[in-house]
Amino acid sequence: QVQLKQSGPGLVQPSQSLSITCTVSGFSLTSYGVHWVRQSPGKGLEWLGVIWRGGSTDYNAAFMSRLSITKDNSKSQVFFKMNSLQADDTAIYYCAKNGYDYWGQGTTLTVSS
Amino acid sequence: DIVLTQSPATLSVTPGDSVSLSCRASQSISNNLHWYQQKSHESPRLLIKYASQSISGIPSRFSGSGSGTDFTLSINSVETEDFGMYFCQQSNSWPHTFGGGTKLEIK
Image 1 (cartoon, chains in turn orange, cyan):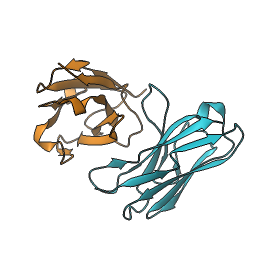
Image 2 (cartoon, each protein chain N blue to C red; image 1 turned 135 degrees about the vertical axis):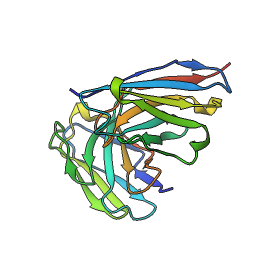
Image 3 (cartoon, chains in turn brown, red; image 1 turned 120 degrees about the vertical axis):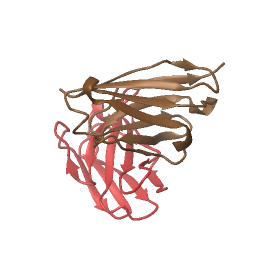
Image 4 (cartoon, rainbow over the protein chains, first blue to last red; image 1 turned 180 degrees about the horizontal axis):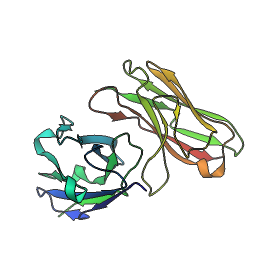
């Protein structure tokens, strides 16, 4: 069955970066893209970006300068990296299969010193 | 960016009631509107895609309608497992945006 499993740190200091790995199973990254979405009490659900099956990316303009999404098809892994984190980046970060029919379990991030 | 406004913010209902949740877009998005349910500490679950298309495994009491700027999620005879948050999302243009949500709670 389709699964997306996320791994990454829960606590990051201000100005540092966040790296999350989304490991997928039940589908191929050469057939489907993967989106990244975050959720916070203050800003709700925000779409961050997507990596398409061919490897191209689209980013939310609000995050484009500090966001990078890459992947390794052979390992079925998608890599999310956001730089220059601040307190208002505190949120739950999700990966989701294109079509949003399957989501990862979420990575709860706190940005604090 | 397209703004999605959901109403009401909170809906208090009794199991067995039928309800309608609204999502209004700031500009026309055709039928590129999707509905999600989210329970506490869980990831969103896709309920309806493209305004009215059903999703495999989702109970038939959930249905969607609308196009353009006005959309509705209907739940026919609410069950206790249906309580939680409901969000709409548009995929008509980038960035994909979400509504602020409607909380469905037990009266």
